[in-house]
Image (cartoon, one colour):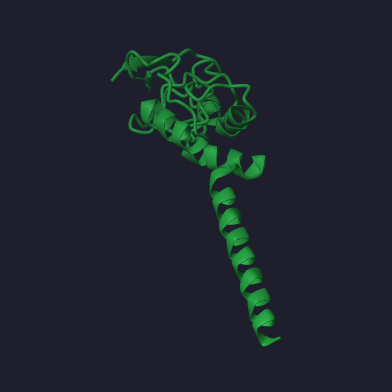
Length: 164
């Protein structure tokens, strides 16, 4: 009788251990819920919110990558390193950038024309423009992604892109 009980306990323990190991393996190899994956993809993107990928920001682009409506290679500021990290995370083949940045450009303000309207500063997704209202503005070159979003709202056309 005792042997039968110990045998049953051993069999149940082995089944529980095997089931636990299968669950661990499944949780590591199968994707989690889509929202979690979108957050992981978004964390890998450079967060410049530059819209060079065709989406209004990094979060919508991450959602499109996860749902399969956008490829992983549309982020020029992230470059090939970001594409490689996205490919590894999602188990996809890395792709070359869809539109590789031929030259890196940054915006520059012609300070003699700037009227201090703050339209460019408001449009900048990475806060690379400094200056107070009614005072001259300047662009922090090391922060600028060259997204061009500051150019259109400028009423005096004092912003242009230059190669770095």
